[in-house]
Image 1 (cartoon, protein in one colour):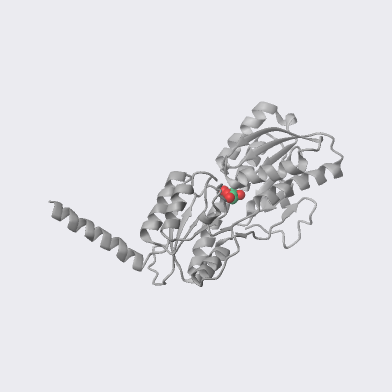
Image 2 (cartoon, protein in one colour; image 1 turned 135 degrees about the horizontal axis):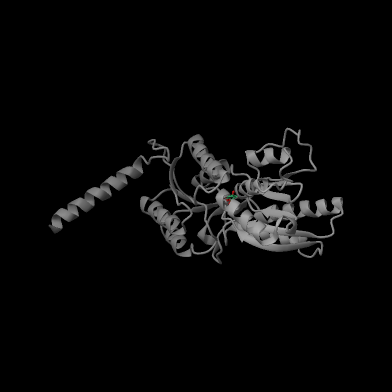
Length: 327
Ligand code: AHR
């Protein structure tokens, strides 16, 4: 019996190792290229995330790399399992987008011990040991939060507003974009007595939760009790707009709307006067990630932090500007 089990175990191991030689990409195609990237995506919660996944898949194809992608459906445990499976498969590089900042040290130590470099994509981790990751490719979320605050200051200056009550709809608690978009925003408006943040509720970056948050806020404060919605992403904002409009409230006129990401639907809403400010956050990180993978494989030294160039679109801009485009 023991012997039979051993034979079975060896057969399974051989199958796994054979899989590593011609590792499939996430579209299920066999890839004969030497480089295999293990990619743990955190979920599919927003249009941003879906575009980000597509960007990684496209870039892997462009570079001729195999991509083993696992989608964690918003569960940290699933991301940890995926990273462990990439270590077992001995991929060349692990790329992952950590759903929250804490709780990664053990699994990243395992990757380090296995000699597999890790690139953080889109979100950061909290650690004292920077050797646990080789590089970070993603937005400067703090700068995004500052941009949102700077827009609001300018709006208050130009309209002469003396008091603005702000309700924040935040992204996933303890995620980098949530923490830094909040911190950047507060660093700009926090000391200015014209602004008061009356509430901050979590919408987890989901459109459905954006609707729920907006309903809760309206029940708590009424339409006359809120002057500004600062929402950490477009999906939640678009959900909130649906609720406002159902209640006969004109977004961007009765309540100022500030959002982050820059997906097509949100940029259109800005052009149509339903949103006041869209802070850009690009999901198109795939190329930059694969470029780093290539440099790593060539033994080149890497920059530790790479931020893409980003800006914002606001109701101060000309809506006919051809650069005002969403992803
Ligand atoms: O980490 C980036 C954020 O995650 C995007 O702003 C949001 O849309 C996504 O879900």
